Image (cartoon, rainbow, N blue to C red; front, side):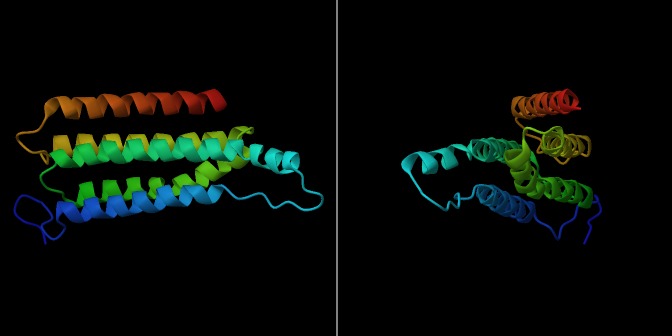
Length: 180
């Protein structure tokens, strides 16, 4: 149901925040599936076992990097939504499309961990990060433009979130270009 101001009154803000939290929790947990215990056969020695674990370094690095990036995106989204008073259908769908790219992170991180020495998995991972950063930026700017932000908004926090997103967009874009 839509009220006279165009706000969706059937979807309380906390429901969207709960969905975001749940998807982040699942995506961050699924990241660990990119790490698999090595299956070894034949004559095992400490050196063989140790070397097999060392070979996991690229996947472990991709896991840690992705986990930290997802935590950063979740934190930024949390800070933004603390300033939002109401959501409408457009803000809802911007957020849902943003979540689509969040759930792709375990795949792009696994690709990076497994084939990170090749260009294509690096481009996929960084395009994924770029899409997340751009959609989060769109989310904030839409909320500001449509007056969905609380009147007593912490302007310095909003400006910090915008600058942080802008920086991340530039970094991700630079890394994509670097790999092309």
